[in-house]
Image (cartoon, rainbow, N blue to C red; front, side, top):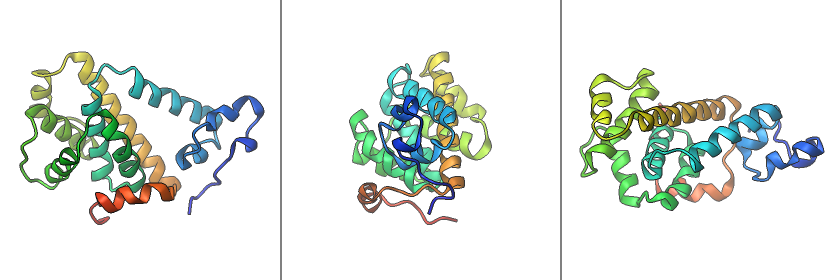
Length: 184
C-alpha cells in the first residue's frame, strides 16, 4: 500500500490533468507534486525518445538497475517495454546471469553496460576498467547519456521504494515469467 495517495486527473487543476494521461501508479503518486511529475516525465521522455544511446543498451541498463535493486515495479514495467527496443528473452536471462556473477555469451559492450549499471548503483560510480571498456565502444556523449540513464533510474527506484508504490496487476505476469531474486 502506497505511503501517499494516488491522484487521478480530476484531483489536479484542469491545466495539469494531462500529466496523468498515462495513469501509472508511479505517476499518480508523484502527481502529489505536479512540478516534480512534469520534470520526471520530461527527463524520462528525453531518455526514451531523444537520447543518442542505443535503445537496446538503454533498456538493458534500466533492467539491470531494476534487477539488482529488486524493484518489482521497475523490472516488470521495463520487461514489457524492453522487447519493443530489441531486448530478447535470452538477453533478459543473460542479464540475470551477469548480475549473479555468471559468464554469458553477451557481446562485450552489453556486458560492460550491465557492469556499469551495477557499479553505478552499488558503488556510486563506474569503475576504471569498465569505463575504459566503454570508451573503446561508445562516444563521450553516449557515455554521459548512459550515466544519466543509470542515475535517473536509480532515482526512480528509490522513489518507488520510499513511497511504496504498488505494482499494477497487469504487470504481475512479467514477474512470474522473469522473477526477481529474493529481497535481501
